[in-house]
Amino acid sequence: MRYLVALSEHKHFGRAAQACHITQPALSNALRSLESEFGVVIVKRGRAYVGLTHEGERVLATAQRMLRDNEVLQQELRSEEGHPRGRLRMAAVPTAIPMLSRFAAMLHELHPGIVPAVLSMSSQDLETGLESLSVDLALGYTERMHLPGIKLTAWPQSVEHYFLLRRAAKPSADRLRIGRPMSWAEAGKLPLCLLTPDMHNRSIIDQALRDAGIALEPAIETNSVLTLALAVLAGTVSSVLPGSMVAAVRSYRELEALPLVGPEVKTPLGFMTQTGVRPSRALDAALVFLQTPAWREQVRLHSGALGE
Image (cartoon, rainbow, N blue to C red):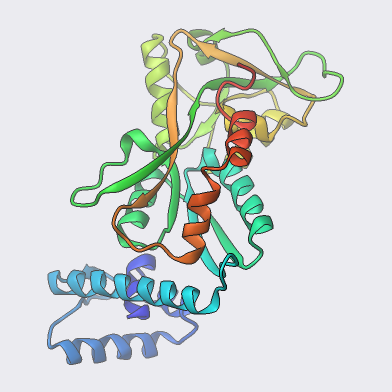
């Protein structure tokens, strides 16, 4: 069952075998044994991984539930009252990674027995992770999370505002300065470093620029949020970032961030889990923590409008 889930995640026999710490022939033989046990073909076979059969998809769904139930049971057996133990797989859209990283660090400090895994995923991969139960807790754009046949529970966190990030004409005395508002039309005329078009953040920016009458041609494209800030620091390009990303680079006094207006774009972010699934002890602790005043204050300070 673990091998089947790994194959579904990696979509490659060799990489799935490597993730399971076995050889590729051993993985293939185990999957054939699984097919023999159930009396159905599970994997579509070709020179490379093609996909799963209809029956294989049903087996995969059961395997995902079984493995998650096993993890939940192990956490219950290992944990003591008030001291949860176990892994917690959390994922966020790239521009929300600073917020999720802060959440993971604070959660681990509060509960040292919890081992958070912080993953960066596109919105589409987040949806797949929530559906397959391979992600326990997701931080993403709540407005776009509508999975057919899957109900999600959301915990709203912040409403993100957008800023133009650029090098300041003169470094400030201590940290990044929030400057005067700038229109999207003005921002669109600058050489910009932006995320690649497959990212939902990019579609938000593209739409805002279209509404401002700008046909966008970025100077640099990347799938790394770190590159967005470093490119601005190192060169002559600017970037468009939400408040949570601007907050992550506030120590750079060489930079300034200008609130973008005309239109004023706001996107709600929230934590999400699949509704009706029994939470692990680690997930239970995380859901309690994200509703505490201490965490809400962190959200207020490090995301959104940054100063309002």
